[in-house]
Amino acid sequence: SIKVKDWSSSKSQLIEKKFILKQINLFNKKKILDYGCNDCSFSRILKRNFSYWGVDNNLELLNNKIKKYSNKFKLLKSYKIPFKNNSFDCILINHVIGHIARTRSLLNNLHRVLSTKGIIIVVTPNKYYKFFYFFKNIFNNYQPDETIVRYYSLSNIINIFEKNKFKVIKYYKFSVKRNKIISSYLGSRILVIAKKVRSNHNR
Image (cartoon, rainbow, N blue to C red; front, side, top):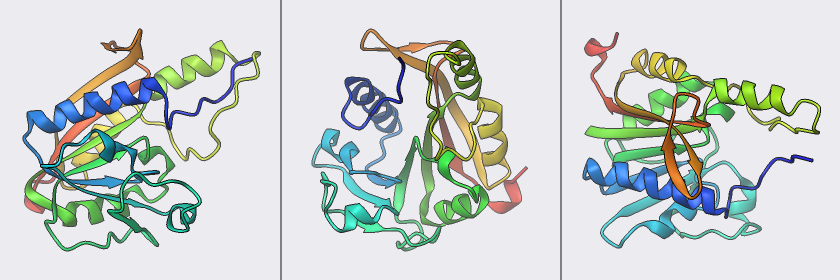
């Protein structure tokens, strides 16, 4: 039977993280906020010239019931992010946005802490792939993640970002197969990179 996989320490996730880091390096960003960081494991692949902070609302992280890979961690109590304006030049939202109910509130707060020339990188499951995968395995004990509020398509992500003071500048649809990043229309995941824009440039 097919069960929900634990990606927290999988080789597939490590390959994906390195792919994300490649995008960060292409834009030469060094101050990273990992929103919904889980165990801060993304920090493990960063060199010392990076500044990293992880934020999450999981109390087990604060109480050290889950091992954290960085002490640069702050607990979230709401969508308000506990940092000053323009604190980061890169914000990472890795497999988190689908769990967020009030997306607009989140994006407003991320916009505040992102620097003028900063970028935001979102990685999320591809809605169309998830529907395909669900129907393919509907009689095979497939267990969807019940904490997901919404699955997004690429057009969904672009639309919500460009309505909230960001402009999408790059995107990929991809899967991790045979330990490689494979670009494809029906890829299992979407990566979107957006830059911060002023309110009067908002569409």
